[in-house]
Length: 92
Image 1 (tube, helix red, strand yellow):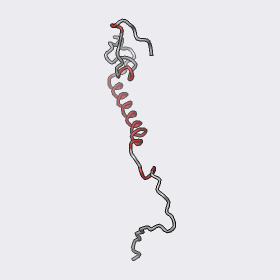
Image 2 (tube, helix red, strand yellow):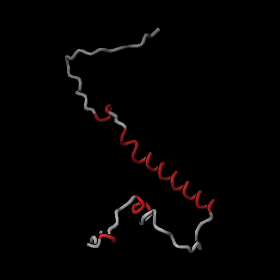
Image 3 (spheres, helix red, strand yellow):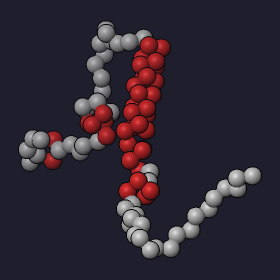
Image 4 (spheres, helix red, strand yellow):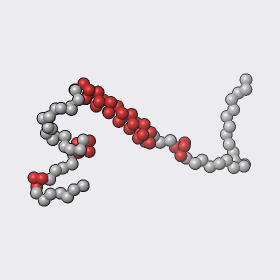
């Protein structure tokens, strides 16, 4: 974090781009195209990153949203003299 300038023209809002790539998505890029990946390679790289993100997100986050009350509920133990219902399959 840095102090905010008192000059109104220098104040910038944080955008999603700042968190994704470190700067605004609307920022004009340099005209130097050296080092840029070919379009097909770049597209493949983006698809791979997206797939890895969703794979990790579903593995690490989504399973925390499912409730499993059977695993977290503490059932009281049976006591001597309690009435129970038992269903036995026929031996025929």
